[in-house]
Length: 248
Length: 337
Image 1: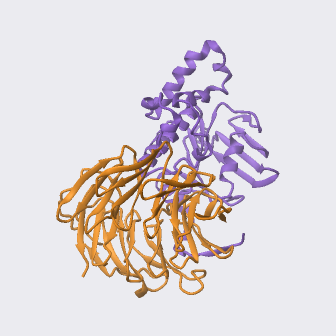
Image 2: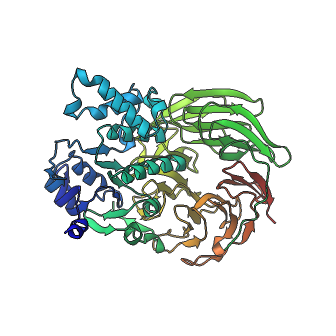
Image 3: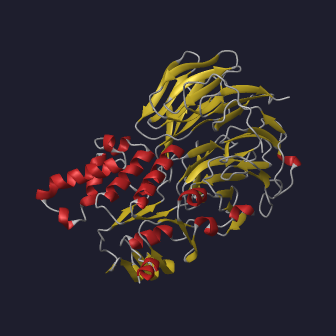
């Protein structure tokens, strides 16, 4: 029986018949996927393939139909699941707001009712600094957002999502706009969290990085078109390069 | 397999970002910390100024006297002859600077805007409120319009008339731009590992998806017949003759370790290009002699003095000499017979 138990998958996240809607438009349809703790998963596909939409649905931030389960709990649109952290695309945020990095990280505690209230303020601040430490960003805490580099800003966003100690970490294009050393630093961080049991799901364009660093790739094009080890799944589009006309 | 004949060379104490020719055989070099320096084969590297802003782009006017420098904290116009600051504008990310052909105006990407400065440092125009930080800009051959890359596509904005820019839409983040010499094509390399090709006169758009890496460099040769881009271990060269590259398989320049990190077309010979890779290799190719789809051999290999990434390659105006600059500060000039 022990062997059976070991062989049985124990998904931390289950998507069954998921259809994701953005402004009445179905961005992704009929997604059926299981994810286990510690997996490092890349969602790949061209622009408009549904990567960001699927991440938003898992984070509870957009409308969807079907069944989405985080462990045994069913997730719904509009209900923040404390065990799921979400890191949006850096480019979509206002980096000119007069906030310090630590203030941004602190907002990551806002959805956790265990940490609510004035009495817990010092606890929240302590957790925020601990999260900054995890991303090697303690020295950035008092810096204004507008003074951070792209890589530093990305680490702050990840720290914000780590404050609540999520079991699932969703990231939308975490390497977007970063130079090679900054990208490597973020990848190391994700690998470390994954090794410690966090399920990481990241929307990724860089196929060579997916092949070199991720344990699983899910290819999207309005639906799941492939799922498995990156070396098997990543399409070999470049083997036959061709400029095709796009109908506008 | 090719081996690297690396010979120890005195290295510049900087992390170079880009360089451009100034007067004579001196190159101006911008480093990652915003330092501006000069290098020539006879004198070597000399620091000119610390501009206190992480360097991102550099453009020197055609007479080689004024450098426009873009950086993480704005833009600087610097007099290379008198070694003094002409003007500066701080507080926004600046990704790109470009002088027009006669060197009278420099276009500056400043946050989400484009600013135009005269050579004496006077700002004569601020335009645009683009969807994101402007990532690249390039003058069109008419010297009246500028192609601007930002999230959502390419905008062609007039520098002389107050009219709405012409939009070439593409949903994604653009990283680099190339405008063909005859002003019929604009090409963008993109964050989503694609190459987008826009016809300027109509709404035709071609794309190549699926490069293994982001396409960060795309350049037309002097004839406008060839376009090279990085984004894979091979450098891809597209044939733009006649009606353009649609349906034509590209030329493949193989064996670039960690991709083509530096591309530089010969200033006068059509189809001749120098490429550098992540392992320090530099080769020269004549793409007209290759066949579509088949990996072609290089025309010449340059002896390398460093195994670190080739950061930049610069031909002199005659096309007889090539300056190669590596990420570790190694820099040397090779004569190309």
